[in-house]
Image 1 (cartoon, rainbow, N blue to C red):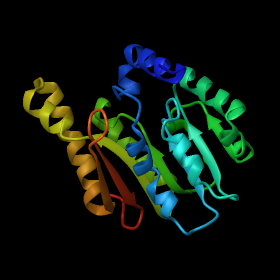
Image 2 (image 1 turned 30 degrees about the vertical axis):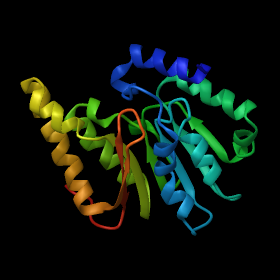
Image 3 (image 1 turned 45 degrees about the vertical axis):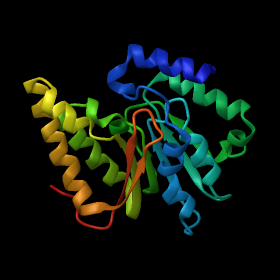
Length: 216
């Protein structure tokens, strides 16, 4: 097992609330998360990855970057941030874009951007957060997005549905509120959903475009 996987499982055990996933993203999930960037003919673009973790999705984003694109990463977990720094120092492909990339170790709510982003890819475990924080996160996402910019994020299939059915009362209430928040954004902004069955667990990748009024 690679060092990145070992660190992922270590952080999962210690910080489940902010790590969220039970395994690193599969290649299929990572490719789906970066699909809008790969298919874009707009260049140059500004790209932001939120919660890159050990970099499973990051590598696919880097493959899709053009020669004049810029790339920011926001990672709260210091252990993951250290792994990412080392990848930018030692991995040939990552080193090639290091002069156009910047890693920020902070919460996304504290992140100060210089300009809006054309693509945002988020790996944050939204189902683990309090409902009011999820609402805040989506407001932050759309504040950071340029007009017609694209947000891509994943969620495990039917997790909220199952937890709402079998979870404790407080958990069901929280997840119902999260459903309402995310459902509103999906209704107004989603233009595509990818189903990734070969992932642990199976997941959906939601793609939202900043092309209508943000829900209030």
